[in-house]
Amino acid sequence: MKEFTLEDKQVFLNGSSFCRGLAPNIITDLANISKLVTFPETTIVSSTGDGYANVLFVVSGLLRVSMSSSSGRRFTVLLVKTGECYNLLSPYLDHPRVLEAQALETTRCLRVMANDFIPFVEKHPTSIFNLLRIIGTAFDSANSRIMDFMEKNVENRIMRVLSTLHSKFGSPLHFTSVEVSEIAGTTPESTLRAMGHLRDLGMIETRRGQIRILDSKALGDREFGDLTI
Image (tube, rainbow, N blue to C red):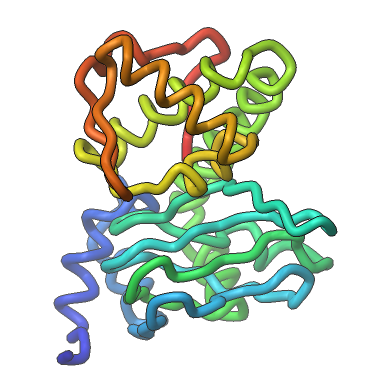
């Protein structure tokens, strides 16, 4: 697979969420400090407590960002797809994070080292608006998910997760019941029961590793604001 040229990087970054509205010279500066890296499927990109502080812009593929309990249960925090970025906050932290990032398929990213990213932002303060927008959206979504855990039953949480995944990835969704349960914060057994009921109601169709959304409006729920996954 050919290496990205500087022009390739500029074109990609121009369409990314972090570079929205930034001037061409700023995008060029970011492209100049980035390097294309490839993570084969299942690669652990960063582990809990390892202090990984580099910023990644996903060019192709998919990263899963998650947390795991001592019992081995996983909670998926974020799915980072093409055009999105991972780890914007870590360069500014003085302690390791509790998150793990893994490539769910072969994933190519533009990597910006932490010691290059901070001077870049300081040189181009207009980029702070996008940085804060992305982090703020993630923060609001995290609070929204806490309210879901407090107020919603499993079926309603599954509905909201499926609606959000449908908005992000379209239909059909290529997720297993285990993967959906890890996003919703429940068990695979409870997820299967909830999805069976949704299937009986005509909202979804399911087959192995695939979920087809039939009634996206019925799945929608914005009681606690938008959900970001």
